[in-house]
Length: 234
Image 1 (tube, helix red, strand yellow):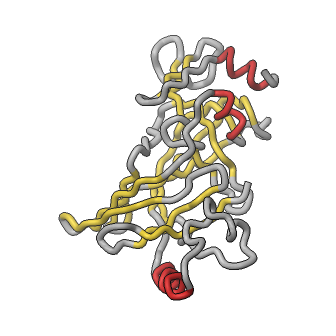
Image 2 (cartoon, one colour):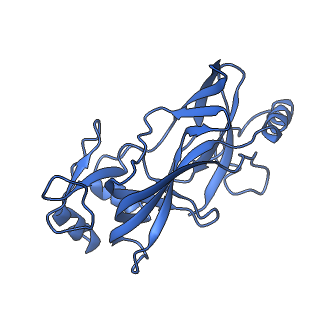
């Protein structure tokens, strides 16, 4: 998959926020900003696909893995850019939120984009304990990027984004982007399930009696038996 970096014009406080718009992934964001206690704060609302079945989410994901979070850090993502003629997705209004702007508006958007420094992201190091889908036969680890975090006197809060937690085990449905090597959840709420062993603790390592609990607001339940069936093409 190719990750498309887009720029979305915020609707309040004059804030311009770059977003990672992904084919089949997040579309655009809106934002509000404020200063509090010397920290510049911004709140963003991102638009992600909403899945109606686990099969639909399975098909959309590049990787489906069970993993334990062994490290967390914040970083600044690459700045967004304005898509121009010839760029992949330039003529697609869904992929390019600035499609259709007049020359003067587009020129102003480009000027503002040049001042962008990139979104703050939280990166979770996920040690893989079981692979259900994807070319990860040897296991290993992946870095899952989530929008939001605090860095260098700035705080970015992404609404509906539930951060992965240190030492917890999860079932993850993720996109793996070829051009940036980023790994992101297919949906911040639906793409993660808390994996628990029969003793009620984090499922590390993975076992046949593990259960997967969806986050509040996610109606899609999933079992190990269903995962095995999906892996076999069911």
